[in-house]
Image (cartoon, rainbow, N blue to C red; front, side, top):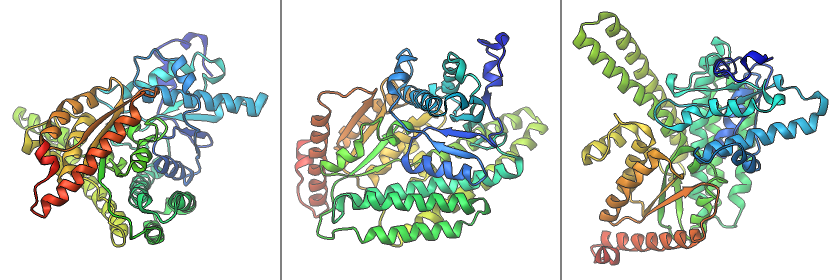
Length: 462
């Protein structure tokens, strides 16, 4: 329990925000990517943690009430989710409600993004409610590549990290199966209905046997899901223009926050692929290796043998980790690609080479801008017909991304659309999406004609 002495003290950032043992607590996980959040919760349940994914977007009014508007939109959404959930729990349980039975899960990142301070700010806001002050905020961090030490016993933490990584990749593949099949399904709604049941089955297997790291069983499930969904395809429907989505990871992954932009683009005639969650996790490992190499060079110049030995050990560990991630990711994707031509994930090294080759941006700057700019160029290289940048209004990395991509893609003749989100509906949003999709269809026609050696409408106009 907190005391009056530390009620409004910065000590709360240490005593009530951190890596605390969540055993025996109900871990409250914000909804982000629908598949990813639920599979992550199942991973925690595999180790006896009562993790639940909170209802989302119903508490947005609360999130906005207790923020100033200077925060980026995901902060308002997640704050609203936790306040709404805790109030509902308090109403449901009455006098039996006990804040010590809960823990709020809110990851963080280092670097310039405001995301790194969400859990501190939300700690201050939760502390304004006496009944919620004793709900701790726990996190995973990019600082150690999302290690689970402190949340789980040491012997379980490393197993959890391996399991959760594979779960993230499975979530990415399930997403890509849906995006590949749904625009061409024989009957509207059949893909979503099937995947709801499939998701529950995968969650059940992870929860019951995930801690044993029996990945072969999960791989078989992914392959069976792929085979089933292939039967939903209507072979008579022509291929649509493919649209690649980049941008801030929460907004582009959270359907309510981005106002279901993927479904709208599909309704207007597109086939959409969103950047993956696995891409970000792989980037975190890659970036840590870059920073360690810089430490190695500095230690070499200064003749600091202690730092040299530490850097070499860490580089070796990170290289093993990178190879492990590539191996596990390839295993899951291969099972699906045997039967269905989903979009493979972007290699982080390939993205960096793409940026270096065009002298557009540098991984040394970091942030999601590096992935968004490089990922957009990879989409173009793979023959996509349009790029959408989804981001919170005033987001710094995404504003950088816009400044680079908009003129560049215009020059290349690739349709491009900015989709800033702040919870309001822009009056011309549907018109903008329809216009963008019209341009993408033109680009598909001209690209197809160009591949056949004919003059193109799009090239003639641009």
